[in-house]
Length: 362
Ligand SMILES: [Zn+2]
Ligand SMILES: [Zn+2]
Image (tube, rainbow, N blue to C red; front, side):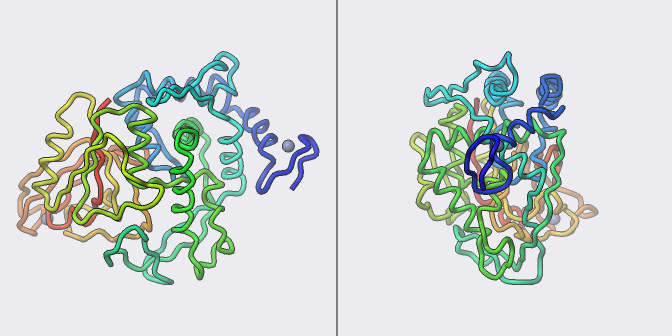
């Protein structure tokens, strides 16, 4: 396609420069609205909302910055909107690897505009259709699932939340081009299944609308080498996922394993003992919805990890009136999707949900 106004070719959606002009004209991109959301989020980090976008890994990092390192969040916020607000125009983001980066608003606004005008996301339906498997796992716990297209419902009140989170993907691209390229292919492959009949098998449809999945080592890279978390370690359930091309281990990260709830509990005690520390977990199934009432194994509908933040992890005994499984339970304080969710999970099923946990502190 060709834009006569900007005399340039573009591949899909709206012309990137036109999209940028359109986004900038919207009230949600005005200085007043941006600052208003900034004030709301810095006062209530848990309100950060990834909305319809598949950006849970990056959103989890932004939530942690809001909660634990607000100065770093501010740096990211101002740099993200440097092209939009005159008084921010000199803002750049200095990565932990000491690269000073200008964030390209055109890159982000094209994704946002296309998503809010004609975007689609996969909706995962259980129990019918071909098997969709996460290729990075070799067990058979994935279950049957089929993806159907669903129109994206983009809520402009979460405009800042998307831009600041997705800006981390841009910084990732700028500092680790190989990892970024591989991640795009990996994420796309998950959705690019013949027979799903969606988007003519064109995987690009997902990343074009701003969604971007991250494998564990690449999320650890963003935490450590982009936003500067320290003492980063990765604990994986035995046997750990195979390390794949483009998601290689990160230098300076400690690797650990766990095979039962006690081992995981000890890792949490150590991991969350330092001030301003965090735990981000890659989970299968909907750990937020599955409650104590029935000890259910993870119903892994998601063909890829969902990243959540675990603020609390406590092994407790519960009354048989609460659960008759007879085992211990784990109380978790989980952050995801704009909320804190207090969840209690039976010991016997907890590990079916959790694959990897990244610990560290700011
Ligand atoms: Zn144009
Ligand atoms: Zn139970």
